[in-house]
Image 1 (tube, helix red, strand yellow):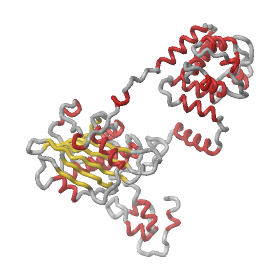
Image 2 (cartoon, rainbow, N blue to C red):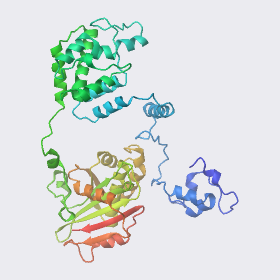
Image 3 (spheres, one colour):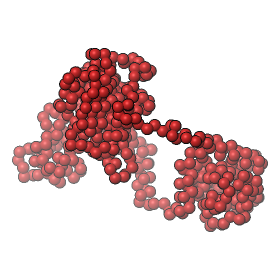
Image 4 (cartoon, rainbow, N blue to C red):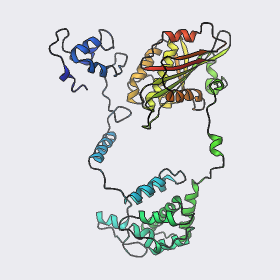
Length: 463
C-alpha cells in the first residue's frame, strides 16, 4: 500500500502540504490518524486501509520487522525458508504417485508409529534413502553392490529380493512370500500397498515399516561396522519398536476424558485454594482466553473472546462476571490471545481498579508481559502493538499477568468457544444475578461508557 500511495495523491488540493513521513498523517501531538487530511490528500479508500493499521503507543524508534520470522529479525534460516517456498511454488516437484500419498496419509497421523520410523517411511517412499546404487551415482568410488550377496543394492533388492530380506519376511508374523508380490519399475509403493490390502491382520502399517526400518539398520551395521544381524534379532527389534507406541485404548477412554461444558449456571468459578492464586486473595482476578477456527469452513470467520472477572465485594460475597465477545474476523491464535488479555486490562481500567491480576494459559504471552520490553522481547513481532497498549494501560497501575494451566482457565475457554460460534446480536445481552452487586449493577454502569472498538459484545452475565 505504501509503495503505490503517492499514485493516489491529489495534487490539486491546497489545504495541506504534501507529507514527507507517516507521522505527518497523524493529528498534532497524538498518534491518531487525521481522517480529514488523509481523505483530502489520498481519498477515502486509503483512509479505510490506514485505519486498520494499529499504532504503537510511546515515543520509541520505528523498527523494521521481517514478517516470516516470529522475532521480526531476518536470519539466513528464515530467508532460506522464504526462498524455498517460492522455489517450490515456481518449480513444483514431479508428480507423486497416488499410492505413495495414500500410504503416507496412513503413516503420518498414526500415533502408534514412532517418529523415526515415520521419517524412514517418508524417505523410503520419496526415494530419498541412501542405498548403495543411489549413492554410487553421486560418488562412483562407493560400491553399488549389496554387502550380503553382491547384487546391485537398490530399494527393491534391499527390502524384498535379497535372500536375507526374504527370510525375514517369511519368518515374521506376517508370513510373507515376497515372490508373490507385484513388481514396480521405481519405488516400493506397489508392494507395500499390496501387503496392506491383501496381507493378514498382523500386516499393519506400523509393523511393515518397523521390519523395513530394522532391515535398514541391519544393512548399515553390516556395511559400516561389520556386524551381522540374525533374522531373530531383526524380528525381535521390529516387534519391540512396533509395540513401543501401540498402547491399547481402553473401552470408554474417550468418553471418560472428554469434557462436555456444563450449563452456564453451573460453570466453575476458580477458587482461592489453587496454588497459583493463593497469594492474590484480595485482588480482582480476570481470566482471559480466545478461540480461533483455523479451518476455512463457512461461518468460521469469527474470533471468540472469553473473560471471567472474579471479585469479592464489600459484603464479603464472591461474584463473577462472564463476558462473551466476538471479533468479526479470524485472527492468528497468538494475536487472539493477546487481544483477550488486552480486553481484560481495559475492563480493569474501566472499573477504575488500581490492582488486578490477569490470568492466561498462554506461556509466550505471559513471558512477554513479564519481560516488560515489547520492542526487544516481543515474543512475536505481531504482538508489539497489543503489548505496547497493554503496558501503557498498566503503567500507572499494579497489574500482574500470571500463566495458569488450561484446566484452570476452562471457564474462559468455554466462553470464548461459545462466542466464536454465536451470531453477534444487535445489542449486548446483559443479566445480573449477583447478590454482592449493588443496585444498579456497577458492571452495567461501566458497560454503558465502555469503548469496544472493533470488538462486539455478545453477552455479559453476573452471578
